[in-house]
Image (cartoon, rainbow, N blue to C red; front, side, top):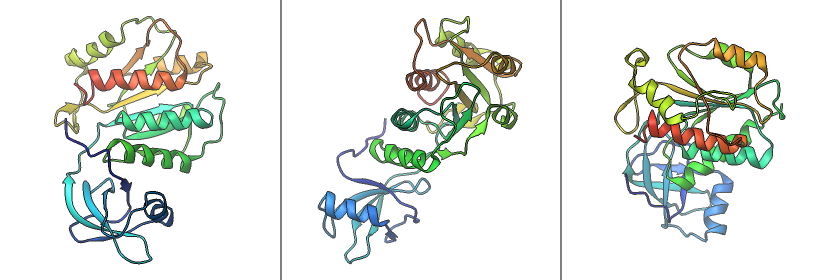
Length: 261
């Protein structure tokens, strides 16, 4: 496992990172560094932009907030090709779920509006801000794409057949989720075109779907069960809240099929 510096300040920036480059900061970032952390010109900050790896940078002199990139501390890596589709939750629970998904290596966050979804309006910018904050705090190099909400029907129509869809369903008969996922990995017929994971091994494109706390409607469940390249998964004998189910399912997927193995 790579060594991360989690003690010093770490910022996501939008500018290109290379030796000697001056990277402008947003005013809130400058305020945070100078007035909250009390940093002075020349003090070190870790910077990343999701493309150029992580860099050791120093706070520039002058009124305009900026960093001067010094040297690369970690090269850019590609995340596991893992999409997370979910029924939106309310406020803090959605914030939590987005943060945990970023920590677990999700490459795309896709809100899906189902029949029993309790929240129909999603603040996408707030989701992006939470994704960036989680990446800054946990040493993540890539910021996942945050997509606009889709209806359930449009989300299924947008799916590509080669992407394995793991569908968490409390009504599923399968009681051993590890065995169910391992069966997909080991079955020759299930081996689809591979993409490269950040760990350097081959993993097929993956997607996880978590429904609302009211569960999927019967016609939604029936539509899912008609799909090919699908794993219907139970997370065990207990009914989990949607944000808890997300963490449990993502941990299982990364351990059995993703870059955690």
